[in-house]
Amino acid sequence: MIMEREIFNLQLSVEATSAYILMCSLQEKGKILTDETISPYWQGTDEQLKTALIELKERNIIQENMSSEKPRYVIKKQCDWSK
Picture: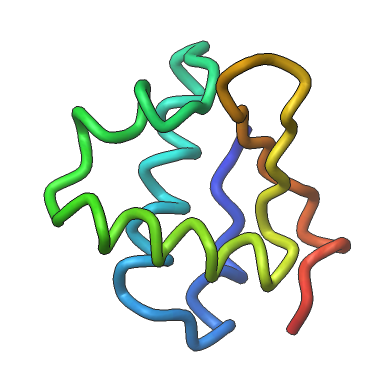
């Protein structure tokens, strides 16, 4: 997964943009994107991460899959994002 530079043109919060960059980095390293894999690298509070993930979901940048006990996040293609 290559980070899409379009993320900087969406006027997201700093936290949402940071969460997106972090998630791209983790996914590039082969990590499954869950709260447990993201939070150790997150520099803000748990509440800030939660809010950032909600913002990314609302803009259709990530999708939350509940196929297992723990939600997993999928970064969507840029063409699916809400502007």
